[in-house]
Length: 256
Image (cartoon, rainbow, N blue to C red; front, side, top):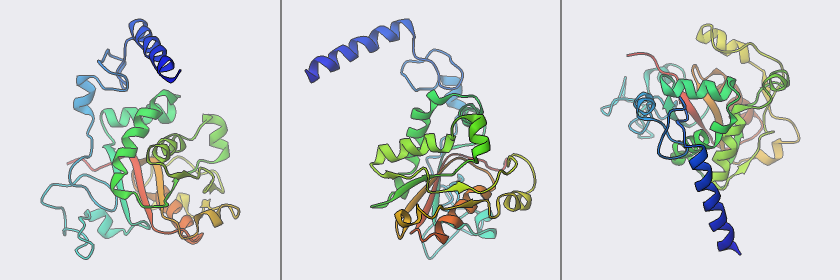
C-alpha cells in the first residue's frame, strides 16, 4: 500500500508540473526544479558558504578581517563584533541581505509568501549545521500580538519550525514574547535600535523550566544591528537557558 501511495503521489506531482511548471522562488521565471532560483536570481543570491564572522555570520575574506577575532576560541570575529560584544556564542546566516536575498526576505516578511517558508527554512537549517548541539531547543524571535494580528504570522517562526523539523530538535515558539509594541527597526541609528527593544522581550514564567540549562538556537529572518536578537538572547539567558546560538536567513552587511 505504501508503494502504491508513493506511485500515485509521483504521478500526481508529474501531472501538476505539466500544468504548473516550477517557478523561480524570487521572480517567478521558469526553472528546472521546485524551490529553485533562475540563473539571474541565483547570480544575485549571495549565499554565505565561506569564511564568516563567528559572532554575527557576516562574510569575511579568507585571510581574516580586522584584528582576526577571538584567538582563544580559534574563531574569526569582525570589527563590529569586537567593538560590540554579542550576548550569544556563535551565529550563522544563509544569505547576505541584498539582491535576491533581500527580495526573498521581504517577500516572506511582508508579501504573504508563506509558500517560500519551506525552501528558505531549508537554507536556514543548512546554515545552522555548525551550531547544532545535543538537546538544543529552537526558539524564534517573537512579534508583538498587535503586529501578529495584522501580519497573520511570524516569519521567524515559519523558519524556525523548518529548522527544528529538519534537525529533529524541540521547537518552542512560545519561549519568548513581546511585552510591548515597538516601532519597526528599519530606520534609526544602532543606538536607537537597541534602545527601541530594551526590556521589550521576555520569557513567560511557564516556559522557563523548559529552557533551564538547555542550548538554544535562536532564529530570525534578518540580522542588521542585532538589537532584537540581543534583547531575545538576554531574555533567554536571564531565564536560565544554556549556551545561545543565532541563525538567520539573511545578514545585512556594509557595502564594500
